Length: 421
Image (tube, rainbow, N blue to C red):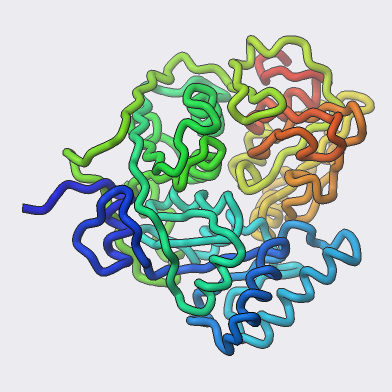
């Protein structure tokens, strides 16, 4: 009789040729995709060369995306991107994305079918956990680990314990997957899932479109999780159909699998959530945020820069103007999303409202470029982190919310929801 396992255990077992792995066990696992960006990959490439390696383990499975400081904002960032270009050319990598092909990595890889259900993906970026929305094991690693994986195609991992989060009830209008994950982080804290797998399930999850599932898995790391994961269902399989570049396996947790803890949430009365500075765990319902005037609103990032997010923001902004003196920055996450938003007329809505539309980039999310805050300024953003100095000056502040709340706040000049307009 086989021992029951969670979806995370099953994926990890399959990638180290075992029938079963135990939480806490150290394994050497084969990786399907090794990912780096223009901040982290240069360090990995240095480690690769220091090891005197000649060839990556697989030219189709090492993925490099120049998205953090691209288009290059200064000489230092131009040098970083040049290291990626040179290495991609030297190694003849199939998946190197730059210039007009470049999108925010964690939106780009699922869109292009590079990642799929049952995969084991490591990336030198903490938000690699985004791909867990597809039913994959995806986790961030250090640049040296990435360098080693680029050589060997393997990675040391400790099998995480799993936590189960069950969401029941039907969501209210203007409430999204972003609000579910913010509420959850607010409940358990930024260290509430340290080195654990956060498994999201329940009727409310099954009703979410893929874009909102990506938002949830994306922010699992903000609770300290090793990975966030949602078992594939019809929504997942419809998304990957005709898209994935490799065969995939859809895993599910056994009914009697062991979890270190289980949390149940009835979300039928949940209102939009806002994370106040200086932590993604400092979360309050929108109605309890109070009167907070803002200088800037940012709609984009690997958390909320997908087409569905832009549509939601456009619904709020249509026929309205951005508050005088306030900057609204809209950042489609990939070239395809950019084109779709333009073709649907969303850009007209944004520009009529007075927004700035940026090419795909991580940009302001990490305090890179395209919307840095000055001393004392306050922003609301659909990004994933609001630590002190995250988007600019150490004495600026960032509030996190869903795209509808960010758009409504841009119109009102203060943090509010669409219904307040």
